[in-house]
Image (cartoon, rainbow, N blue to C red; front, side, top):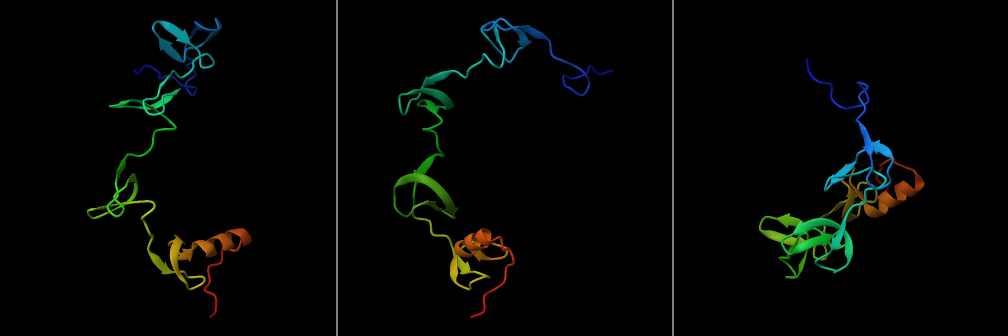
Length: 146
């Protein structure tokens, strides 16, 4: 017979132990260097960020050192069009394109008939029509008469 797993459904409650910080008997959330901490007393450790130099909660330990949440972003690569090292939003065949250089394809809107970048693909709706439809609460997608 299997041993019951911890959880509320089978009535199992994890043992409560004395928190090293507040001294109350609670469920242990974290154990650090033989000290027990409840959820209320445990604080995420902060380290000095290798990019900004401030003491913050660390998001990633990079080869250059710890990186905080504010400095962490997607890896930057060299854009094939402008040559700048930026965040890449589109990868086409052998090309890497950054947000500033990327131009979304223009297709005919099923509401207004103009060729513009689309907010919705099905039905094809441009950003202007999509905003108008959302604002008016009118989600009937019909083409305007010309």
